[in-house]
Image (tube, rainbow, N blue to C red; front, side):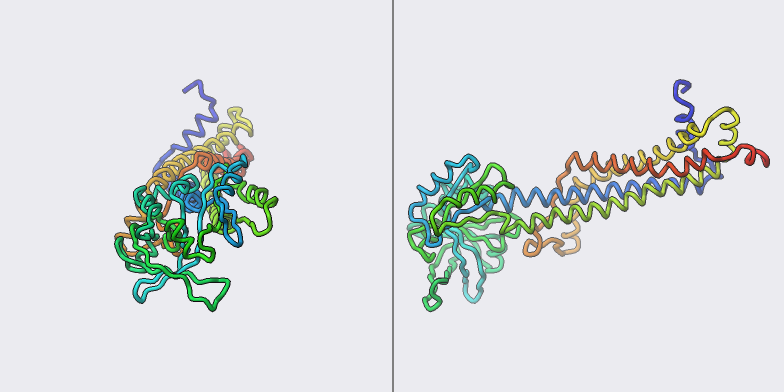
Length: 415
């Protein structure tokens, strides 16, 4: 004990003091710690949830959808040659043909709009993670459906149409070039349901390349080739560079046009909510000011004695800064523990509340996913801890300065 500087020793003693006649000071000190704990914990939980939305957006929605697509206005007849041309680019890691058909799905009197994609099962897995949500045998059935045309539906579409595997669905595809023509239509058998837990479940339908091509405006051709790039965020530049030298009729699109607004909205929400909660942490940290001011008033006699024994202003300031930092450290550490526990259990907690109350807080028709994801990131915890401790340190400066200005003669006159 003697080896410790006396300022640290006294500051720790003051921080841990629990005398009966000082109940008010102890109570306010406890409130400061509790406020800091809740502020830090809630901030970390919200940041983890926002990180979870970011992760699910990239791994699920943008994992199923292509990073970019190259189209031909009148369809691509020799897609194998176009695929090889795109794969020759160093930024393209995979490419697969597709047919995209804006269609209506009909079962009895129930009708729902959907984007019908024709895919090649052999090459689709290289550009999409669809195999994570669909059994591989079902994808192979799509590939070999020449005898019986089949279809896969998103869970939301299947529920809206009230169909199950084995039911037949009529697909109608209008001709956008000539509104006077009757739409193409075909009866397809549902062989499975795609459950991604995202908004795609309400709009996605998959069939074979051949079947979708027959329903499209250019039978026998594909709409284009979609690609996966080395870097998700370089996809717009890559698509532009690939399409620019191509002949007239080719054009490209990328994920930023279809889901870029959603991605930026998640990041903007994270920043705004983070800023709001940082302000809450700041308010909680500056509660230390009121705690230390009351301690300074209560300890004026002790301060006067320390000064008469030779303690300078810096040492007196250090005593109360140590006390404030102890309060900040305890509150921050407790908040970090709360943040870890909350981030790990928030998904299960929300699921339990949904079952208990019989309601669904997140609906994939409105939100990107139908559950509350969470992903902890070490840099968030480090940043929040540093900022919280920094605010606690700043909050100690004024009370410590007030303590250093105490005049021993004025205080000891009445002792």
